[in-house]
Length: 243
Image 1: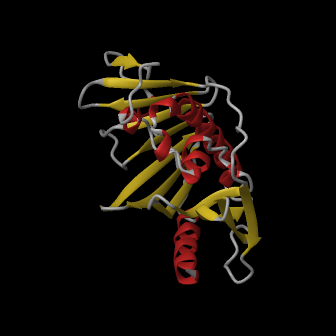
Image 2: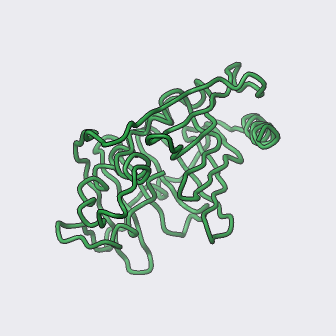
Image 3: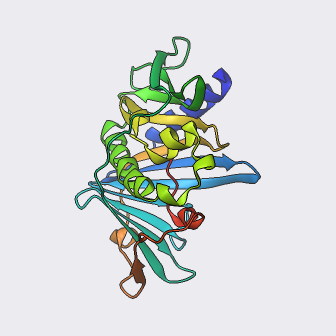
């Protein structure tokens, strides 16, 4: 694990030296899922808005508007925009203990003079997700992503009725549905693991990048829709990833 962390940090630090003047932060990840090969995910973060895509300007993408607290998921194949409005929600009283733990990795290379922290989110005795977080690193961007996760979870909470009771595992509830975004509390995660098999590794980042305004635009002629009260299990797959 230490070699992976060091490799990731070297890429991050070398990317910082290449940053040009501008106003956007671009973070590149490699993600893996069970039964799926590695793929790229790009986060473009500017002011109070986030674009998430597969590193393709012309591909499908997700926009999060932090001012409006709204998420837009654009699908070019069927010319639609899934609109997710912010919904307030609270953690329920689980029948198990939800726990968040942090530990400093003393032997890890530092980023911006700060140590890397290990993060765990557990449900009972099961670790649902684990991450390495650079303390104090990209704090503004981390704050935006935390609110994005909370906004997305508002839709997941309201859609939980569509998930059969026997599939509502403790980890599903704390890591995917009632996601507080606590992994972003102390800085930006550089790698993450989830019990459902999703893995994410930061491979590079740049700050102060100039990006086109068009990357944040919503197609005017696409049909907009929201997931209604008649949601059926399986429809949740159309929503942006929660992690």
